[in-house]
Image 1 (cartoon, helix red, strand yellow):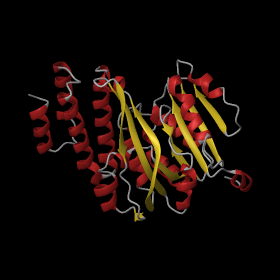
Image 2: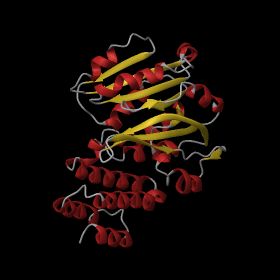
Image 3: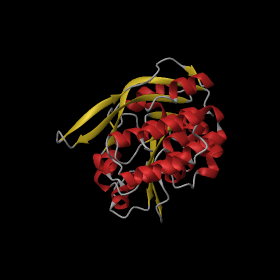
Length: 309
């Protein structure tokens, strides 16, 4: 970045990858524009949407908003990469197109920690419960309010073993740190990974960071919709993606191997318990897992008990 661009660069870049989210996108963008702190830019990457998402994004008349349309659907991993590569801010904040910031003072509160590589803030998971016919919410508030060095014990025993810790959302990350992580991950960016891309991306970014702090602020609604979870056709894609992520991280970071394999085992057991996969899918998943080197013999036996009977 040259001196002139550096002087004009915003403090924060909000990157929003979009694929067919016309119902939620306007509220998402407005939640950023409603921030009291105004020195930010929004980069919306339309990932080949076939609904009206692109027109919704283009309908905003605000010079801080840039819209990047992609001709074809490339996957959220690549779309987010495009947005971050075009960002100019000192810090990057990821925001999914069906999520929203819940606190108008969020940016002000995060920037208090402007010497920290990763500032982690609280999320609230909002989802529609079909049985109760209503929206429910659960706070995902695992943050560590003291400054931590990003050493291996903290990565594996603290941040990485926690679901919230590994989401791309809920974090303000120095752009220079993020770009170093993406550079290390470069060869995998074009993998059409939908499930587990958070684990993949954040693992590379965390390894580049030197410091971390948790901000005691509820900053974001993290939406989940039951229809996303119950479409059985997505289950096999999910398992294949997670296995691919596990294999990549095993080859890159030996110490993550056991952690990633445990995540996959737990996720599959959850699918079986909720009866979201049928017997044929169980058989296919079992075949994939039993041929994946990332699993230890003990873990394979545990998976077989719940899945491969």
